[in-house]
Length: 415
Image (tube, rainbow, N blue to C red; front, side, top):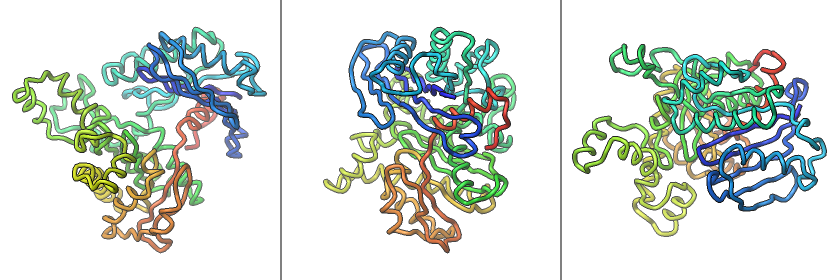
């Protein structure tokens, strides 16, 4: 089965085509056929398309909307130019899997998309106004181009965290606000945390009920997750992705009174303050330079930039604080697992975080840490460390493709 995996943002479309089925999943032999990203959808789009094993094709062309972006992807995929042997017409794409950010409390697992599911995703728009509308544009574009006969599946970022107990997801606000408006912690990056927990179990050769770990998805967006017996019991992102760790442009945890204070002192509207907290804060706001961790590390090393160094230190300290919190939640964890762009590719950030965890029994392996980057997996603590540390690359697209197959075949989810 060839599955087209779509991740539609407000002005972007990322995609992969993955060949998989129940047998290939069991054998861990799924095969990626193509991938790409279309940025600045809605204006003059920047496009990168690549069939597996081929040189990427880059171009710029006007694209008015996500429907046109999807149409361009399909025309390239079925053309001789893409050189994908197993796809010669649109009928050779057998299903679509969509990343959907917010499923609320009702959509707690991956589901086949129908009219009712679309309505429930629409009901969650007020909880994810920047993400769910774009996800829906991808779904509707898929229905227009493929027709009702091609199955489409929604895989939700929030679903993995639906196992959190009320003690983790409720805020200390009047309970009627939860009952009326579902004000609570939902958590995000769930597809990534779930995939990494599966890979950890596979690496260690253990059953789901033996997975007691703290996963760290560190990139431009960052989140931590406490996983007990294979299920999420706490996570750092909350009602929106703003809460929790310091991120590229998001502030993370903040005294809520700062919002009111800024409206008075700076004359800002609530919307302007929220834009500041989401897009002008975090590493960018503290450093005054960039949200890119690679550039900050370079500035700190080459120019001894004080604010760049400060931003990096705060970033790492916040991660350490959440590890300590979740270690208590789990009554002791077996491992800390790094993933995401920064977690997978920055030995220095991993070192800075782990050097503060000796009190939890983590003995860091400096030599092993330096050798792991660019999609590699491995142990970065010593073998005799009480609390171990691993690097495991995430692969959300593969999980979405596999969930799509399972839903279509009505097969039980194994992880």
